[in-house]
Image 1 (cartoon, helix red, strand yellow):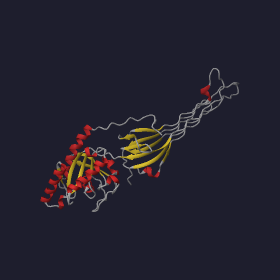
Image 2: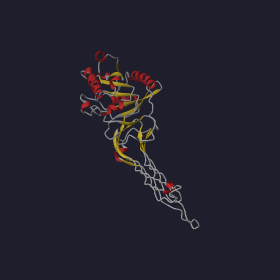
Image 3: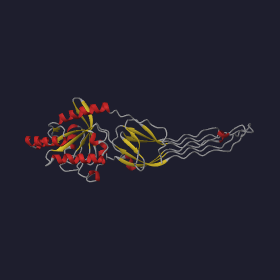
Image 4: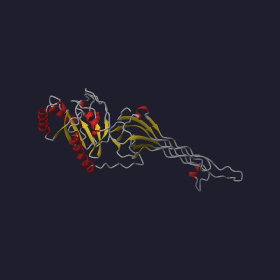
Length: 348
């Protein structure tokens, strides 16, 4: 299945059904009164977050979604049926944005969370509604109110406990494949990974979700390489594993390049807890590994862990360090779902 994390769609709620003008016409009732029923209410357009989805690819092939119109009222005081609502099913972690993408309408972070994007039109009253002591035979009936229509953007930000960052070819996909059942494409050239991948890592009988995103290069925030578009998928992570290719000539420069791009992107990524991993140590002599790890410690002023995703050296220790921070993050940052609204007064 192809990965798509942004989609623009057009939504329209249903029109309300028109009221009916009708009078009783029976053989032995000479002056039958009004009996025109009301129309049915138009259907809503609702968005719902569900599990087992991790892409918006379905919205590439269908961009228009319309709820059903309410049916008109009928004689004998019969109310028209309400229109059927349209439910858009999206992955957990999807944000709904206005057409100009200037503001977030709702952030769907919990399975089953729903939100009314466009409210259906109100029903029109039949002539029975206007009967009074002074108006015994009203011939007035109202049309139903029109529904709402507008464009919106869907933006998916994957929900993971930990995220993998680093330059292209730093070994992120190899680490993901070695620690989870995910099978990302792995090759010895940059930008092998073209879209985010998720996997469930396990250590000491516990599991957490790990996200791998395409590598960053210098100038990514200006659109170089694949840009920084996919950094949104690690915004929700509690910890970042910054992998650095140990075979790089200057590992400090590689570290600083990625940190510069994180700072340019913003969204608090530089404030997240970071574990630095010097990868591919199986290709280096022990003294070289220690020399490069020491240089990274001085530059980052932080602990540097050494590992090899291919041979598995140091991988379990890194997973334990990640899990320890994930535990703390789960306790501190309990995501509170936004209550579903019954109206949609944000619509343009």
